[in-house]
Each structure stands twice: as C-alpha cells, then as structure tokens.
Amino acid sequence: MNPRFHAGLKVAVIALVLSFCDSSLGQALPDFTTLVEANSPAIVNVSTTQKAAPRDKDERAALEELLRYLYRDRVPDFKLPPEPEEREDTATGSGFIIDPNGYIVTNHHVIDGADNITITLNDQREFKATVVGSDVPSDLALLKIEAKNLPAVTLGDSSKLKVGEWVLAMGSPFGLQYSVTAGIVSYMGRSLPSEDGQYVSFIQTDVAINPGNSGGPLFNLRGEVVGINSQIFTSNGGSIGLSFAIPVDVAKNVVGQLRESGVVRRGWLGVGYEDVSQSLSEAFGLDAPRGALINRLLDGGPAQAAGLKLGDIITAFDSHQIRKGADLPYYVGLLAPNSTVRVDIIRNGEPQQIELTIGQRDADIAAAPAVLAPVNRLGLSVMPADKEQLASLGVGAAVIVQEVKGAAAAARLRPGDVILTLNNEAVGSQEELDALARKLPADRALPVLVARGDAQTFFTIRISE
Image 1 (cartoon, rainbow, N blue to C red):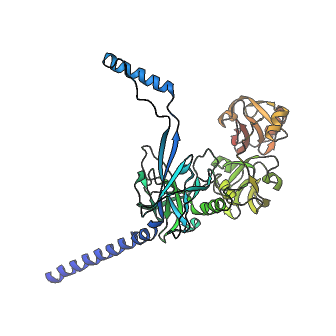
Image 2: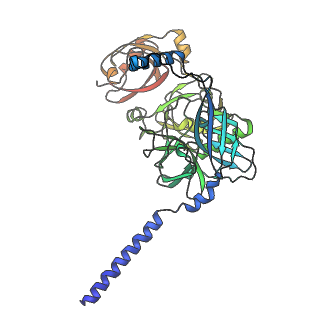
Image 3: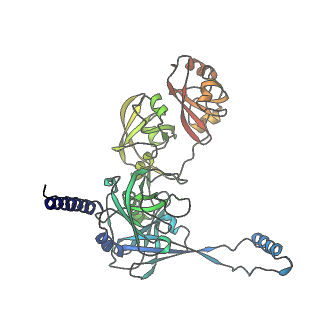
C-alpha cells in the first residue's frame, strides 16, 4: 500500500472518530444558558429575622464560673458583657415568582416563625413580604409582595419526569444570590421520615443543593418548574449528591388552596398501613412485594365505611399504582374531601375493586395501643384483652402475648404485643388461638397482625411442623 495513502487514511479515520465523539458529546450534554437567562429574573432570595430570647441566666453564670476557673487570678472579677434584652436570629433561603402580581413560592421551613421576611429580586430590589399561607405537611409556603409586572416561571408536570432526565436548580446557597447547579433525576417517589405525616413523594436528584437552596425551583430542560428544592442528606452540612425536591404537582394543589383560602384541606382515608415485605407477600399470596398493607382501620373512617378490611393490600388508588406504603397518603392527600375514587385491592389473594368517598383530614390521628393473643403450637402464651383495650383498638376480640418461644420468637413477637389477627382471623382467647393454630399449614409464611405501642404491624410466622 502506498505509504502516503496509508497515512492519509489514518488521518481520515481519526478525524471521523473525533467528529463522531464531538457530536455525541454535544448531544449528550445540554446547554442551560438559554434556560437560565429566561428564568433567573423570577428567582428570589428570602431573608428572615426572628426575635430570640435572651440566654438563660444559669447558662451565663456557668460560663462566667468556667472563665474564672480558666483565668484564675489573672482575671479576678471577670464578667461577661451584658446580654441584650432582645436578640435577632437571621436565616436565608430561596423562592420563585409564580405570578407577575407578586406571589412567591418557598418552603414552609424557610419562613417558619419569622417576624420579618425580606424578598430580594435578581435586580437587587427589596420588598417586605407577607405570608398568604403556609403548610407544614408539604413544607410549602405562599408569600406576597406589593409589586406588579414581575417576571414569573412556568409550572410544568412532575408526573412526566423520568429517572435519568436532566434538571437544573436555581437558588441562593449559603446566601449567595443567583446560583445554578445541574444534574439528573436519580429516583422518583422517594419517601422520607416525617414527624408531621408523609404527604410528599420526593423527586431525588444528584444536583448540588446546599443550605440556602431550600425553596428554590428545579427546572426541566423545557424551562418548566418540576420541583421545589426542600431537603438534602448530608453528614457535613454540604451537598453529597442526594437532594430532594417536592413535585410541582403537589405545589400546584397546595399553593392553589393557600391562595384561595389560606389553608389546605386534604383527603383522609382512615387507615394504618405498612410496606409489603417478601415474607408478607408470600403470606398474602402476592406474586411480588408491592402495595400498602392495611394494618389498622379507624372507627367511622372512609375506608371502614367503604368495606375495606384488615389485611387488604391496596395496589392502586385513583388509577395510581401503589408500589409501597408511603405512596398511599401522598395520593390520598392530593384529593379534595368528598371525592369518589376507585381503589384496587388484593383480599385473600384475589384482586377486587372498591369505590369509596374520601374524608377530610383534620389532624394527625394517633394509633391507639394494641391488644393481641397466643398459641402453644406457635410458641405463644396469651391472655384476653379487656374491654377498654378492645374499644381503644376498635376490635371485637384480641389477645395479649405473655410468653414467646419457638416460631413466635423467630417471628420477632414479644411479651406485651397485642395479637389482632392470625392468618386474617380474629382471636380472643388462648383456646381460640390454639384451635386456629392446630389447623394452620406448616412451612408457609402466615400473617399475624400485632399492635405494639402506638403502631399496628403485620409480622409473618412460619410453623416448622
């Protein structure tokens, strides 16, 4: 082969490969500049001040004593400077304008307890804000400033967001106004522990979110807000690639109600629930772990009125698939009270559909303490629950565990547990439990509904013989 031709061929191949790589990278990595230019004027900094109580006198006295000990004779009469009668704590977060007439969305925790709220626009203008309404369960707040013709964002549809999709966050991390970070959606429908009730199924991303980003928007590549940045998981106060945003579909519902009435009315089902584990899926005849397993029915609640039962597994609610327990309150909370919905359940291994009317959630309803029963073949010794315990649990029969051995111990049952049902049958005495245990199959996971403390939970017990 001609050396010149061979050299020319190599150059052509290299150029072709580089051209392909160049175009591939160009397609894979998006350009956010247009999105940022179009939406940054609608992003705001939210600064708050709050009166703080003077430090405790005992704390001051202890500190003075410590300083005297450390300085000894060098400072014989050491005194701290007088504490001001009033101190102010300050905090900062982010927000975004949703209406040209001055309506702004941020997180509830950004403005919670604030005496004064200052909004700083991207053009450095400052306004005092008032709180139209704030909602703890969704961690959302709606603010209002007196201004007109403001730039506003476009709200998108978070239900269409997919794992792996590019997203961009804007906000004020560490109080630094106007900062943007990008990444991808790493999970949809993430449930996080909550003291106030789980009404958010979060968008999880790897976007760098830091303190101060809270309340800022999360955009898709079309320049639509798909989420509100709310939380991070961190061990050092900074971003580690796990951040969580409230879906904009939740925000549209909550903010719409806050704007209309200043309060949020949520749907209520009146059930306790748990995830379906592998052993529970076997015990209830499912092909795979999925759905929300009902372990408590509140007396007079919508679920009880519609005919739902303990041990039913909700697999779909209002046409939404229920993958795990925390999906259920999220979809229930999106509905207005008195809405009629279809619920898909599995009962005794068979799929069924039930229609029910949603109630209204007025407040968190604590679960009552539970009472349950034992059986010899299961390794249980039990005693009947008294009338007050039965009434508090809303059941007609239950037994309390006194001694645990064998299969029951392996199932992690313990004295004091209240057994409500065994293999979906209620038991009210040692005799009833023994009779039921004698006819139960061996080497198969069987569901046991147990009340322990303030919670009701399904365990699985397996009899070896």
